[in-house]
Structures are given as C-alpha cells and as structure tokens.
Amino acid sequence: MRFFRRASKQGLTAYLRLPGRIAYARVDRRVPVPKLLAAGVVPVEGDKWGEALAQLHGRGPVSLVLNPADYRLRVLDAPNVPPEELRSAVRWQIQDMLDFHADDGTVDVLEVPHPEHVSHMRQIFAVAAKNSLLAEEAVLATNAGLNLSIIDIMETAQRNVATRLEKPGRALAIFSFIESGGLLTLTLDGELCMARTLGVMPESEGLDSVLERLTLEIQRSLDHFDRQFGGIPVDRLLLAPMDKADSLREGLAGNLALPVEGLNLADVLDVADFPDLGGLPPVCFHAIGAALRMEETKP
Image 1 (cartoon, rainbow, N blue to C red):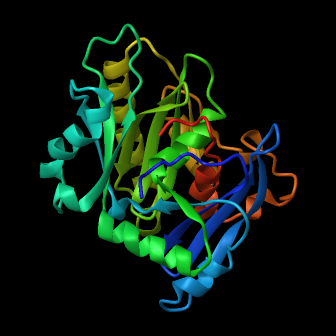
Image 2: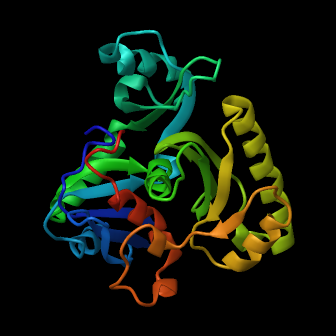
C-alpha cells in the first residue's frame, strides 16, 4: 500500500491509533464546504483493537494516520532523475536514515515549494515506513470491515487544515501537540514547506518552562524558514485545539513577532452538527485533518 493515495469524492473516515484509544473523524467532501459528520474517541480494552475499529464501520474509504514513531520523514535535495525514477533514487538516498532495509519499506515523496526567487536546490520530503507495520495495520482494518485505502501522516494531516486557512502568497504556521511532543508545520499555497517535532511535553513540564522552550524552538524554525524562503512572510501562527490553549497563546504572542491565534475549526469546515465544539477531544484534530484530504490534494 502506498502513502497518500487519492481519496474519492465521497465522505472519508480517518483515524489514529493512540495508547488505549482511537481518535477518529468523518468528513463529507461532496458539499461546497466540507462538513464534519462525526468525530470522537473510541476506548480500546487491552489489545482489542479490532472491536474498537469495527465501531468506525461505514460506507466510503478510510484513512489511517500513522504515529510519528511508525515512519521517518526527512528533507532531501531532489535527485536529478526522471519523475518515474524518483522514488527509487530516494529509496537508496535515505537508507542510512532508516533502522530497516529500504527494500523492506514503503517510500513516498512530497515536493517542497520552490518559489522563483529561491536559489537553493529543489527539495523534497521523503517518508518511509516498514512494510510489515503497514501490513499489520491493513489486516486490522480489513478484519474490522474497514476499506483502508489511504495511509497518511501527522504532517500532511496538519497541512490539509492549513490549506483552508492560508492567504495567497503568505506562509502559515500551525502548532499542535501530539503523542511525541509538539508538531510545528509551515505551509505555502497548500504545500508543506517545513515540519519540526519539538520535544516539549506539557504534561510533565510547567507552563513557564513550556513557554520558554517553545518560544525558542518556534523562533528558530521561523528563522530557518526565512533563510530558506526569504521574502515570503509568515502570516500568523495558529494553535490547534489543546488544553490551556489560551494561556499558551498569550505567552507566545508576547514573545514572538507575529500574530498568534487559536485555530477555530469552524473556519475550516462546517461544524453545524457540533454546537459544543470546545468539547471535541483535541486528539481528533489530526483525524479531522486527514479526513479533509481532497481528490485534487497532492501527495
């Protein structure tokens, strides 16, 4: 199974397997404004993943969002080869970055935007995951009656949300918390420019410590973006739904030289069926992003 297979125009269900639970979302893309049909968390007893996944059963394709520990994402200079040879060239280029043999994995690529004024070489993101892991996930889904047709990753799920919030010619930064820490992405014109995992765990650190470290790491990322894409302004930093979002927003806004705002899902899709949007578990954010994948979305 390849990453990023195109989604159909029907509703798409996306899910993440997290410790002891499954976060999921279903989005209808057959309407002018994508509509959130369902979202929530399904608890998992022990290792009964199949029983929990079966509760997501419905018509239409299904997307699995891999956890960061299950794949490797790297930025590389694009090999100078014909398009049909790109994945093969990248497979060997990233071998030293993998803890498994490249032949035992699935590799895909995403192009990094390359504006005309940028002088450095064209770059790509390379993503790789073990075939054995993907096969295990496929068996789980199939046995649960799910039509698993897309394998996605956290970074592109976050990119899908950004696509609906960007302003033309301006980059957008989005920050979220995931199981392994913080995830910062910068996107431009619907494409992923930069993705960084920040080792900040709010559950084990005080707010002051989190703010200090996040400010430093986010500013470093913004500086790197400016060096790589100088001349393209970053419009704002959006914070995905999370606990203590207001305190974090206020702290970052006081330390960073760009607007910092909370991300409102009502600006992304139709949430009329969710009057208590604030009660939606934050862990559903990336499932919603993955479920927003559209037919015209590039890998």
